Image 1 (spheres, rainbow, N blue to C red):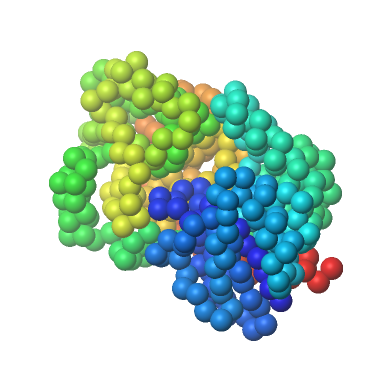
Image 2: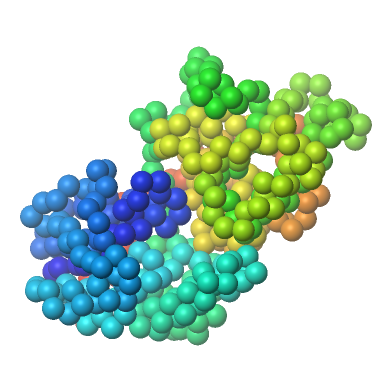
Length: 400
């Protein structure tokens, strides 16, 4: 059986979101070593150096033109290049136009339908039209959460059996081994990693961590406002003591660290620290390489992802993997990702976000409990399982 795959989303240097999903899935499919299966990966340009190496059953096919590749170049090749794949898979919601091959697509989420005002008009037009076409013409649709499946069924009016949930896995971001459930990060190791954060990134003291693309749906402006309520007027201890519930041994939060590359409509995000009077406390670090990201998770007081909507929320599991307690939203797929190992907030309620941040800061035993539960939660997810379930769907479609 020959399986064709669109590998372009993974074929970038800095991978986030669907790019990371695509790459990890490709890597795991290559390692599957299932007999009688061959893979042909279609690309616009030569593969990145970290792509799986070619072999007898794993080949790359580079075709053009780069412009209108999915509309013209790819369909043309699928029609005329022999042998043709038995099934074609795209890990995105952009299926090739006029394809002669039965196609399986992935749809991460339908945030553009729920929050159209948070997208550029040109992007919104493309998302609506191309996703609609792809959903109608795909033989099967893979998605990464039950919440996203329900959305696809309801909003695109497709049969339930056409949509299959394949939860994503979690990768180890660096050569550094994650801490074990019964072995918290050693003090010496934490001191060493703190030194790296200080020298390389100018991060000192206790901090709250956010990781994600800078775009409106991530709800970063409300997060910054909530953070400002904790900081002002005299720091966490003063505010907590004033409320009568503070502890003198509670950590003093020094900063809110925001890691993520620019997405779209991000201007208000960069204006928010000044608006709320915390411009000296909010640190924007852009994209952080995989080898350094675990340092941020392992040293953070807590991780927070207060998104208005997520297809899944991989950073939630990444934080848990590296022993970082999590706060996230109580909407869309995020309770699926977090299970009972996170605190949940109403993402539209700044007071709720503030209260849960304060609770996490003041309760060390709560942090320890969530870390322990997080190590159990991540056992439910693996890229090996994702690849196995994806292959099952592809083989099913190919045999019809």
